[in-house]
Amino acid sequence: MSTVTKTRHDETVSTRKPSAIKRLLTNNTFWIFAVDIVLIVFFTIVSIDNSFFGPSNLRNLMSDSATALLLGVAIAFLLGAGEFDISLGANLILSSVVAGRIAVELAPYGLAVIIVGSLAGALVTGMVIGLFNGLIVTRMNVNSLIATLASLGIVTGVAFIVSSGTDVTGIPPVLQDGVGLNTVFGIPLPFLVAIVIWGLAWAALKYTRFGLHVLAMGSSRTAADRAGLRTKAKITTLFTICGGLAGVAGFIDITRFAATNIAGHTQDSLSAITAAVIGGTLLAGGVISILGLLGGVILAVILANGLIVIGVSSYYQLIIVGAILIIAVWLDHFKKGEKSLRLFTR
Image (cartoon, rainbow, N blue to C red):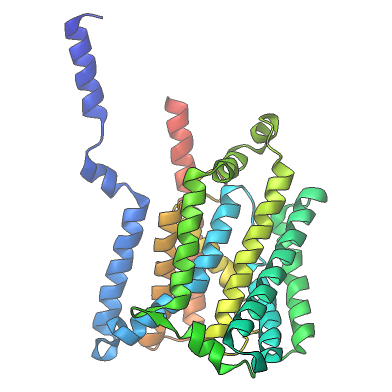
């Protein structure tokens, strides 16, 4: 190649390289956080006495983000592997019921024993449910959407049976004071726990073989099998881990409110899917955006909290969440089409 030709080639390559501003403006995560900022400003302006951006409500936002972020991490990894779990909300409920009953029984033994016992109960419950889902998907070859839809009904029914259809109350207040309402430098402890787990998930995705294998399975399960990955064992393990995250979310829930909420959390799985997809995780698998997930979770929590602050009925909140889910799925199809186009034009 002559010097002139090489120079022209280099110039062509350099002109095709997008600028930093263009890369930023086409970055999905950037726009998610930009929308978050716009919503914070909007709700602060329209709320009475600008209470939305007050210290008390900011702590509420962070506390609300804790369970949402844990479920979001779980669903993001499952979506990245090409799987679904719409039973995470029911898992949270049953885990909280088990943790709540254990906490009531351990009330005379002090905070440390209560925390260890109830957290262990919630974690084991969540992991058992996750293992159950994983085995149905991998050993019975049932589609994960159908499997977890069935699990949603089964786990919800078990939760009502264990709790006799009523919320578990009488949970020791010391658990709420020591964990749920506790703060570190003004930051709620549940949020710090969720952020640490979110950070570990980011590190696992970026630096471990397991994270690489999750993306490989989501990109092409057939290729992953041919490459020698034990996909069935890994998918079962992934479901179990994600079930454990739902269990931790259930434990955090009772520490915040000192009671269970068996009638709530019905939309938690859909909200987690919405946050993950809006944040950049593909429904078709193979792509996970952990940073974008954080922005998506914040978006969902800001909307829910902000609508309450300005006095919008919860019925409208359901409509808005459903509309955002449709937009998220549409964006997912758009991103998949864009990715296919890039592959086709290489």
